[in-house]
Length: 120
Image (cartoon, rainbow, N blue to C red; front, side, top):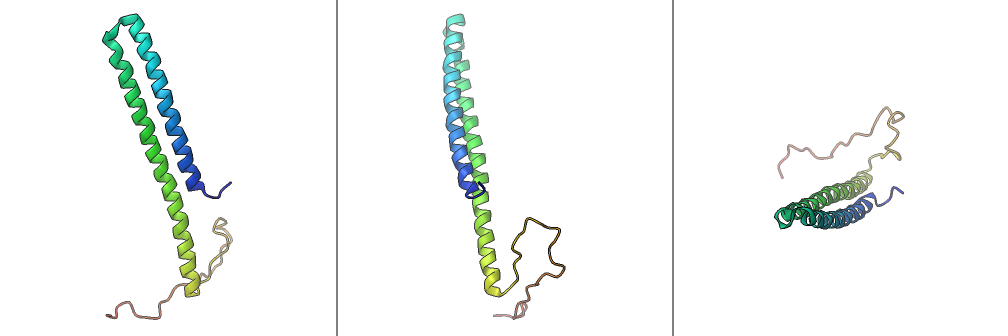
């Protein structure tokens, strides 16, 4: 359920975008036909504006949700890389980050074996 959350969010964003575009087009066509039958061709532009704004709003929501999905994917990759680096450096890594109350009193601090002020 919690694996590949970023990819699932991107898929959901794509589905919601297409649903929004299709709903906007259908609603706009219905609006155009209703306005055309009641007022003639003078106010058809309202339906076209509705279609345009609806499609644009769906696309912007798609971009927002895809950006969040990408952030989730990248944060998972960063966590994995950080864990690998910590293991190579010999640092202790807690098994579970979700339970913050019972974390150890002393945490292993990273101490480099070189002086950062030294010049290369």
